[in-house]
Length: 340
Image (cartoon, rainbow, N blue to C red; front, side):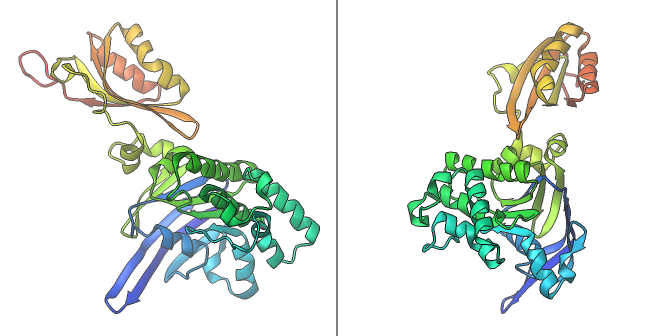
């Protein structure tokens, strides 16, 4: 587990002081993928560099599996750093070394025996899907392949934590998907805790269990992705869920319904059956005024603006909510112009 406690970091220059991290606290459970998101300048990369001990914070604690890394010095600090694999934002592979040679670098630095190095490199090339590229040099690889080699190199020393700083920046969609698949496999097959710094909410949608939203050096939202998308007004729900105004059909906005609500459904059973079953059970007419479906990791999620017509409309919405859906009723206009 990664625990960050009240972390601060400021940079001082001739033009003044820039506060990059302002009391940042968060927890990343062991064996999960957490996305750190925010606009440029929000403090994402500074947070990653502090956790990786590439920069020293001004104050606060960074605990990995209960050990506060900020307090370590000398050999203890070097040992702790080996438990944190880092995938830099920019291409950092050595051009004079092959893919296999780049992956072997941390093992050589640690003094691992030749046969152990060779076996580990083969395992990691297989993990990242580049077993046939072992002898290729970086300039013979695509951008996505180089990024996958960088991930394999970061995993070479069997770290418990993997930090990836903007691992998909400037990559096309297909290449992005291959890189994210590798990060997800690292978590699933190696048990590594993954922290991904990104500006792309598509990364969160694809592989993240948790998300932390940074704004001007502060965490403004943090938690499990599937919890945050059900919270009204959360930045995560706004970024990841379909907009309820996206598929409004002509004439529907002027129609008069008995009850209207925005409904968030999570999971296969809820997304597939809950709304039509409610309509049938309570004998109401159901109209979808907007919204749609998406997938967060392996979980289908939907947000719809739902209009019901019939005497049992309130009971139908109550029943939907009792089965785990999030139902937020909207004002409707009854005959005569009165609001309900």
